[in-house]
Amino acid sequence: MKIFILYHQVPSTSQEWSKIAKQFAQVWNFPRCCGAIDGKHVHIKQPPGSGADFFNFKGFYSTVLLALVDGDYNFIYVNIGVNGRSNDAGIFSSTTLYKGLEDGTLNLPPDHVILGDSAFPLKTYLMKPFSVRNAGSKQCVFNYRLSRARRIVENAFGILTWCFRIFTRPIELKTTTIDELVYAACSLHNWLRSRSPSYITAAAVDQEDPVSGELIPGQWRQEINALTQAVPRMTNNYTTAAKAIRQQYANHFWTDGAISTQWRATGVNPHDSASEGEEGDEDIEEPDAVFENAL
Image: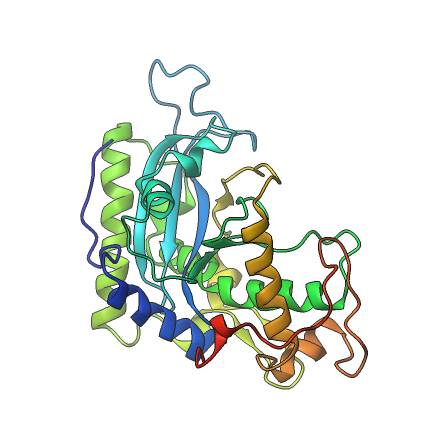
């Protein structure tokens, strides 16, 4: 697999990560967040002699695009080339991003995280939603806040597909050429984002009604189908430390870090005691020191 250089490279210093965290805190009200991650299937024609290697669980041939996006719709890490048949945690754990987060070589600042959906593992550096089964009020609010912040990655993929329509049909090229094409498209997306104010307009991406908190779909959703989710559900095993960090976020969002739309969007009454559901047996505490001056 080739290693490419993005127009915006993955941060390598604490200062660069902190700049992204400031974006997420100011725009998406999620403190100490350094990116949102997701994986998608890129539809391709069956490569000659590949058998079922690229045939995914959705019933078509694909290669997997895994990406980390900053708070301004830029791809800051891209991994492309895993065949669509891959159906285990190896999709994420085989990446250089995972290795760098695990061994600390990416210099993610202490107490900072990235955001994933329920398919990803819960880590001290990676937050995912609480299980919706038996979720209490505080967990529902946390899930809403995480989903609200990670909407950035779904929209980045949507805009990429909307702009580069080659992703709307099966790509018939050599697999190595497909990898280069996808990476070039992500780099061009970043370049256009930095150079053309009209590339991503407010109406193009999902918006939130400031009164009701309801989602207003972006224009790209009306014209194209989103890329298919690629990262399969991973193990629910996680450490006590990872669980504690997620609970600290849930406590913070219920108290000092609350925003008005979270109550309307979730239907939760802020004046009620926070009911605790699965994995939430702590009382409401003062926000942990990790969040002081984070917003």
